[in-house]
Image 1 (cartoon, one colour):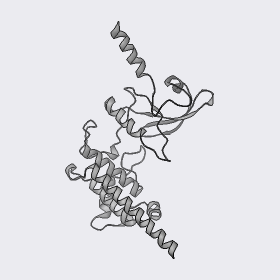
Image 2 (cartoon, rainbow, N blue to C red):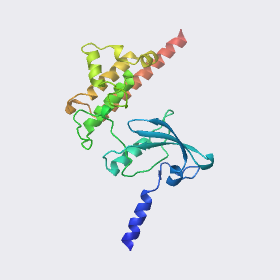
Image 3 (tube, rainbow, N blue to C red):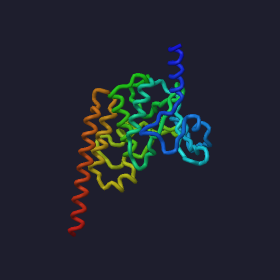
Image 4 (cartoon, rainbow, N blue to C red):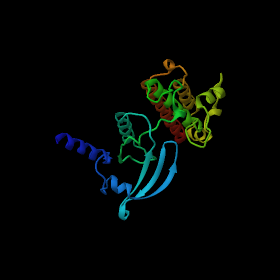
Length: 236
C-alpha cells in the first residue's frame, strides 16, 4: 500500500508545472494552461511557440512546446535552470516548465561539433564548438546550416575561414553590427576567438573559462576606448 501511494504521489507530481522564482501573481496549473485559449505564433526546429490567454483573460503567457530529444531528465532540468537564470531586456523570463518523456530540449545540428555523431556523447569541447558557432552567427549575421527548417544556412566555421583565409578582413561582419559597433579591433579579436572555438580538432579549442575571460577583456577594452572617445568629444 505504501509503495502504491508513493507511486501515485510521484505520478501526480510529474503532471505539475514547476514554477521558477516563486508562484505566479495569477495562480494557474498545468490543466489550466492546457485548456487555455492559445494562438500559435511560431514554429521552428526546436518546437512550437504559442501565446496562451488564461481563463478570463487574467494573464497572457508564451508557451514553448519542445520536441523530443534523447537527453536524461537531470540534464533537461540543468538546462532549464541555466535558462531561468538569464536576465535580458530582449528575453522573456522563464516562469515555469513541465517535463515529460515526450517534451524535452533538442540539440540543433547546425551548432554541433563535427565529432558529435551521437547526441548523447556531449563534451566540454563540443560545448565550446557550439559557443563558437553562436559567436560567429552574432558577428556575421548568417544562419548556421540546419539551424532553421526551410532555410539552407551555411557551414559558418568553414565559410568564415574561406573568407578570412590568410588576411583578416571586416567583410565577414554583419554590416549593421559593424556600423554600430565602431570597434573593428575588438570585433576582430572576437572573430579570432570564435574561429579558435570551432577548430576541427577538439584538443585545439580553448576551454570555456579562457573564452569567457578573453571576452571580458575585449569588452573592458571597448568600454575604456569608448570613454576616451567621449572625453575627447567633450574637450573638443
